[in-house]
Length: 200
Picture (cartoon, helix red, strand yellow):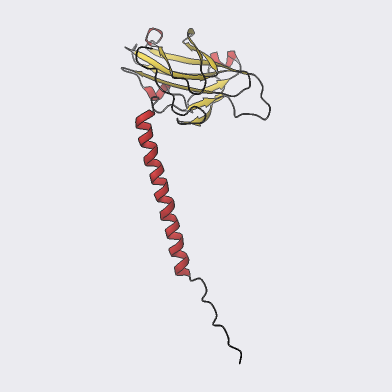
């Protein structure tokens, strides 16, 4: 006599909902742990506040030389006291402040931040920061943060408020287009650029 096998119960809607809920909780837990880890690492290693890595364009298929200007205008109610920039320019850039050539920068992943005294070059009213960047293969990154009394660091921080152009006349007139933004450190290949050791 043939024995019939009892039909297998279909996957119920209740089971599906429980499985989805469990998955959602797992994702939320992982995201929360990642966010917590990021905050801990930022407190330990981040020296450049809200500054984000910027560049002229995303990398193309074929490497080619690139020379461009990244710039930011900002206003100061009064000439500041001590003000210093923490800058990283990979592979190289010249920092201009209101038309004055202030620093030459050449850095690569693993190097420390450059510290530049801005106080002698800033004035009450409108100011302009320019990073004149160059790269033999078109690849690189710029990071800029300012610390000081009476300084709105966020107003100067590299990020979406910066503009870029390959035309010096456009840089002088404030034209150009928004910079490409990679995001805050840590970003590969630079990680968290560190301040120079005391005394350097």
